[in-house]
Image (cartoon, rainbow, N blue to C red; front, side):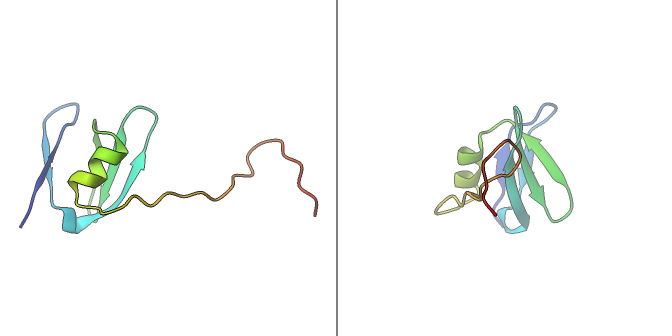
Length: 73
């Protein structure tokens, strides 16, 4: 079993990469969602996914419709 150490506000936390569901960017911190709980860590998204063993970073590039845009229907 491999554990990765992340920095949080209170204490460092050890996370098993096999149980990580997602890693998301927040306003200031990064959220690591596991199968049981979500942790807010200080590392950036890129650093967190590399520590967890990701070969490449998947990004959501779907255009957002939350703003004034000209869309012809």
